[in-house]
Length: 423
Image (cartoon, rainbow, N blue to C red; front, side, top):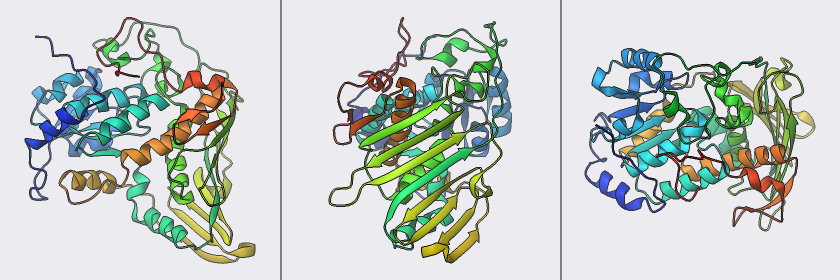
């Protein structure tokens, strides 16, 4: 039997409200929320102990996830529409490749499910706008997978910045420096036996199966990923913007990047420098800078990722790796601490608490959109070779810039049931 086709709705509120109204989210905190996992790859494995159903078009990964999560065979499906049609599933975790993040999230909201979506929440700027609108028009919880926002030590560090420990914060400098390795050169072949590759590609432009653009390696292709600026960089850019204290989109975007090291088929840069300037009404403009080198093991502050905040009265270094240092004027040490690298499930637990009405999500879609917008705008500047001014109120590039071409994406020429409306 064919699974009914679902369509994306910009006016999603009615269906979502009706779906949620049938359930009571204010029940006992101990009540189990039935959650479906969409995408059983590297990130999806972290949720095996938390889910009641699993979904993946690769039968090998699907079987491994089903066994690890202890779910019945009927709750292990290849097509996400079957999972979304299950009325007992109340929420989903979306841990697919980037090109499926927003399409799957929109379908889930349309089906009345709460959504935990991995970072970046969208493959491109336009999809982020669509997901923000859908989330705001629903009464459902949408949590972005930027886990730093639920770590107490990170929250305390940001609170210190708000309290003026280094004065007024004017600049944040973030970095992602690591030795990624090459994906080499491959030729199209038949997909692995049993894999529903047509479903894996989904609404993206069709590209034949190739080993170095499938599991994990999809990150480095324009059609499926957002490069490492959108992958690991999403964490640093998010808490850099958080600490900088800017609650808007940038007013100017400058970015350069390219293939400086690897001779392979990666389409996204292995080297990039990005900068965003934010106009502050009645105040001084603020700058956010991001550096990425995917071929080096020489790190600032002996840390492969982190953020330095520069204020009028000092500096703070903060890393998701569990490092904190606060300096006053002329580098006088104020504080230095290590707070461990364990992620735990605080962010996911916050998502569950928000579903039950006991908390607000620590990474709601409005913050997700503001952070991933910076990523997508920088990627647009890199791909077009043009920096540009940006109107943060109307969310448009100012003037006639070639970067406009890269704010949205091209979908399958022959159509697909998961292509968003108004995309």
